[in-house]
Image (cartoon, rainbow, N blue to C red; front, top):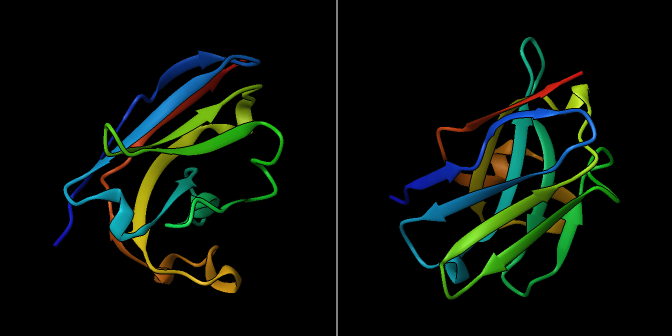
Length: 123
């Protein structure tokens, strides 16, 4: 069993930036690491994933604004978010799994999930 702990969420004004961090209980090199988000009343949505070979893929809403990265020294996976808007509001989850590109956006491709960190963007 792997535990994932997210941090860095909070309240930010539209146009601002926020950096989320995910700390797993096992080495990040063991898994492909992803970020998802879920707004109230909506399905969980793929944001980004960084694979063990450091290949990165983004959901349409994240392209050009968000950057996912691995920090092996700290054993964390970070999500740098900029140009935030109201639609970015939601609970952001870190996930760990073993994916192939065609299934990266599917929640059932990931074995472990964190509890989530709330991001609220105000107008």
